[in-house]
Image (cartoon, rainbow, N blue to C red; front, side):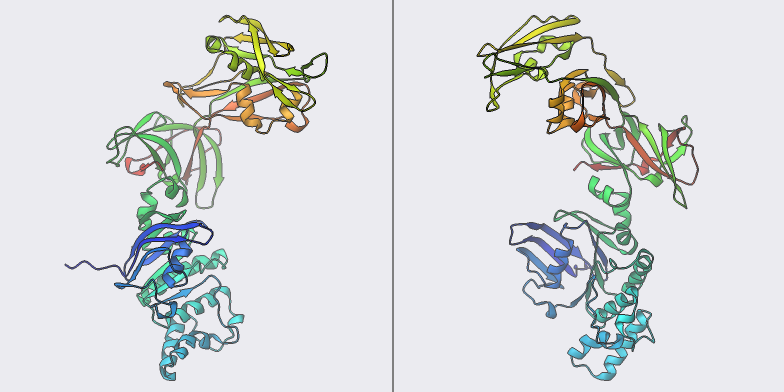
Length: 525
């Protein structure tokens, strides 16, 4: 059997605008006859640019556009066998419904009886029989859109291009028109190419969805394929709601996430390859903790009419809280007033003492010297200290070249860290001292707090694997005063979103279960 050729082929389409902005980055796409194809993506992804290239309103910087076997890149719009419906319908306000639809036919100088036959057929198709003499400005948004579609279809194009045509309609009407557009496409039997950023529209109407991001096609497939087998994290997150979890593909049909191994239906990944795992909220069932593959605590329950949306914290974040002692500005000035030096007391873990050198001590104490008149920084030329790997308090003195010095305390402690076996994490941070000025003048306080507290988190199974930490505090950095404040450092926990018809209590312990086919494994982006 002879294979049917695509009606439209985009071959390596590149679009670069005058400001050197690359909007399309080598697009290759085949569209078959009578398909309803949706170009889906956020604003700026290149979907409308691709549509305008097909319509003849833009010429690509590189590549070919093949239409029914012919290269049409140089063909003007009016010679192409396609019509476009825009978000702003561009109906002629001085013409009634009949004349708006007949406009293109009159340009072709068709006979009046043929025009009447075609227009009346279109009015029946769009469900506006009896409206032919009505002023288009008196029509509703949905009716105006139908007239715009009829005006495009009456010319019998092979392809209809639709650039976000439902964007101006309210939600209820937009949903009605989604089904209406699909019905019209099936009745007239031509190719529709539809541009939208609305995922629901794409899933409702399309035979094929083309997901785009930053001028690149991320995935092409049917609505079922795109939803159930997203190619990557971006597609999974953009199409519907997803629980996306970092994991590791142990081998074919076996994936690991949250330090638990699960059977799945995916294959052809490298062994132990880092992957992203998708679990859709509707594919997860809430059961007793004993029956669950994963357990957690119900964080919130939201009633959505047909179902409850339940958020279950399956992996609690790992948290440690320390004290930040804010002291008055402590600087020493030389007798001639030409130099200043400052430093802070600080804590250090007993295990880190041997690795401390002068540079690390200067950094931990935030020691600095400067010329008051110009604020020019001076070198700290010498340190004196006798530090032992034993708990206690030790003195360190910092010197400038001019002999100005300041002495501070290093507190050596046996710092205990917080373990979270469920998340396979440990986290640690130290109490620390800071001056009022250091807090108020910080340009990146969250980062500075982590540095000052020497906050760090890691995997318990491998201390060389670090885990990102987040910081939380309840003071106003612009109006801070001398005193002691709590600063909390934590890792990101994990919560699963679940859709269920069963009510569960907030705060209750539950189990979550799912089938192997509900686990979708993706390559990491």
